[in-house]
Image (cartoon, rainbow, N blue to C red):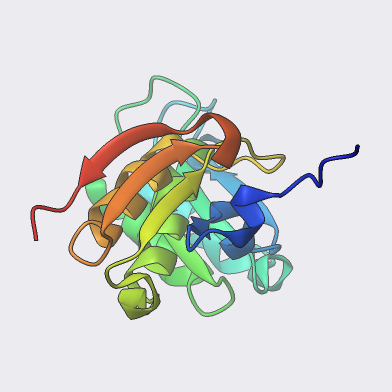
Length: 169
């Protein structure tokens, strides 16, 4: 006598929130300010402005861009702002920081523009394993955005989820 195997996960009302579904494919680029500093450390304003003016900014078309300095140079705040002003007309987004900061900023923007009403009063699992470089901060933000809507929030995979939140409604 064979017994039918029932996939309880597939038949449940559990909603899976997969951050990989929102992962943008655009190129991530770092712009190192030190390339325009004298010996990588000294900002000479006239030379700096000239170098920025002559740089091919179109190469960053539709890129996500992180502006940083790889040396221990002490640079004025306006230097990063000026680089941003040159890159912004071409880039999809420009931030001050490294690639990890950039990924967090990308997800912050993406997660703020999702309609979470589809998760209203439903148990939600934030999918844990990802093949794409989803930053930990994205999971934290996702939980914050889901909490006002979800009946419950879990993390991981349906077969081994960790409970995180249960609504008191």
